[in-house]
Length: 147
Image (tube, rainbow, N blue to C red; front, side):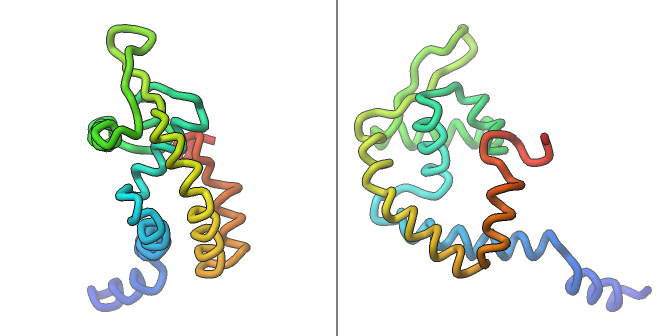
């Protein structure tokens, strides 16, 4: 195969390019919904994980969300600066516990309707079958491929 044939095949069959395109379209739905609250989708993912677990250490958040620890540290620092999370001592000198503040808890409650509306928009965008498949096969509580 020559380079043109290879490129045509890759363009026709590439899963990675399609997932990336899907990521941008889906992320935009949530980013638009959360913009009035001055938080990003990444920040909301962290907030929701911390809220669901009642607080947790940064390493377990990073592992669960498949985020680099340094990236997560920047996200958590931004959330702390906005008063949405607090950071306290962990179970040893090397770890830090992230917990929701009252403002963070209020944000979770205030944005729930927007999240539900966003879920419906995404379902309309990608269809129920793909939505259900993603929910079933890509759990948030563990890294992709760890099952």
